[in-house]
Length: 315
Ligand SMILES: [Zn+2]
Image (cartoon, rainbow, N blue to C red; front, side, top):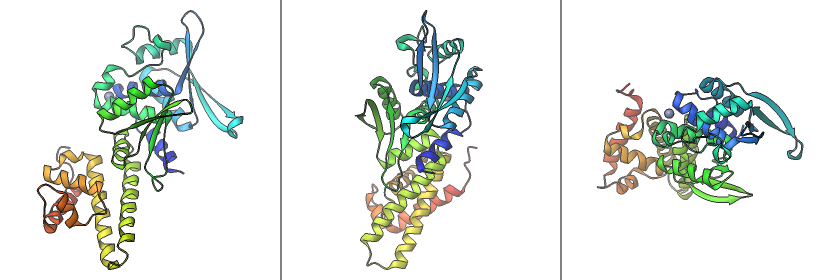
């Protein structure tokens, strides 16, 4: 399975989460993968469409758990896409209306502006709901390429206003994104390795994030070892192994309790190590302010490894 497909499956299989976040994720899934058909007299009907069975299942579960709504699933094969499966989930007119009202409490009529919910204000305020919205958007219209070939995650949205909302939520969550247009879609994409990693973590894809960090570390280490082909191979292997262990420990801390849980001086070094897995200790020390000796860096890295193996005291 490709990295992107595994990521989608991991996200779709996460626990549904808190009530507030279920609503938020559904709002994104609805905004990015549902279409509305009008039946006159203000009667509307929502249909979700996706090519992923696991995403369809997630929408089904969230609708049921959060709003007690049961959609009707169906499947068609798209003949002009070589028989690719397309899944639909159709809601009744009554359920569509109830859902739009529930998802867009800021609007008087849920179906205003042809109804697809934008980002409710509470989503922007709460960190947990922001993450859920971004995850929902990724499940609906996101993709990620093979990190062995380059770092890029993207969302292809239908219109500029939804792309604006997403870009804003990403910025608020510390993820740097860029914009482009492609074949009628507004594309929001992330291509800095740090930001891709943060994005994976905040969506809750800890397995994918760990895999991504390992690929990334191996990539920059390989670059280093090519450059240093003349240097003592045994010594280099030792360095590479140590750096990889450090990156893994730092990723684990970051996922379990965040790097801010570390003392300031360790946090600074942890972030530097993640950004530069290929550097030698001496070079890492030179990047610190104030600079630190090789043995000082070693000592701090040992403390980071130790912290990764110590359970969080706050639990
Ligand atoms: Zn929430």
